[in-house]
Length: 387
Image 1: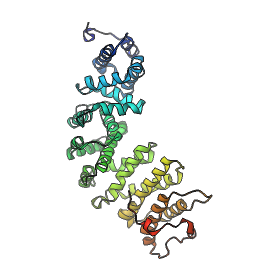
Image 2: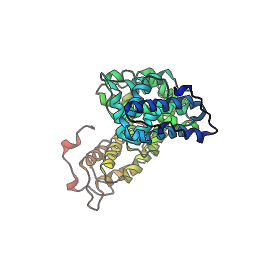
Image 3: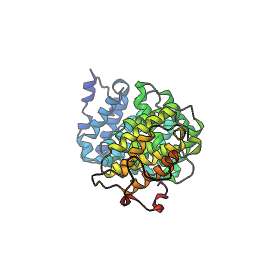
Image 4: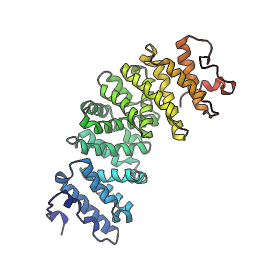
């Protein structure tokens, strides 16, 4: 008998969660595919009654991921969900399972990405973008969050081909920025950040594409003064995030904004003050790992145009503290090794910002004392461009 013809009755949510579909016997791939379809249809059928929050949705998604059938036939299960459900149905349950699988084990997100590509086109990415554009699930922040998060995870793994990136147009960027403006309340904070993360990864994709066109920056330049929630929350996310990937994506967008002339004054001055405080705190607290060095260089790359191109050029903020921190980065003492890139970036900031600010002709002399000859680097090294 078709499972859709069976009527289920549940006394409470616990009895719903205890359903035994995933424990049915299987001996081959066809059995596995049949059971997975039965489970997905079961969840879709009762989603309005029992799957109203992200926690509830995640619980049934992880029940599948942690099941013996998934452990035994993981690639079969994921491929079947992609081809028979995610690409064919306008339902969020298959997306939720794929998202949970990818977050639980990063290699599965890579599998989902590769399995979604056909003729160089990412069919799953294209479907998600179209559904976001149509606002199919915008009646629920929890459900919309699943779409945005899955789209983000797929987009951050690898370069998106031009065929797919062309779906991201100015209309979509404006739609996303409008969503950020409309979801400023505390109850919508998590979804607000999901939307911002998607904008961040789109900016990254434009940077990776090597094209001069960047629709994220183009649209932002047309919305100065009308996307203040986005700009404020961007700084707020940087202040709170412990995710290196998100931090790097934010810093890349900030660098792009501060080096584009029509976006020099995109941020309110008070937001720039907060950003300076964040940078001072972070560069002083980073460790010696490769990841920490990457973050340090990213912060320094942002700091230079922040000080030179924005309102801070005419309204300096904590200039003496900035200078002291910069000096400490290249003269840390205790025989601690300073990376050559750090030296180059710091000395360039001092040359291009501090010395112009002080109108001083003595390059690195201050109350902290002169730099040591061993710390000097060739003039040609100082002229290298930010990569």
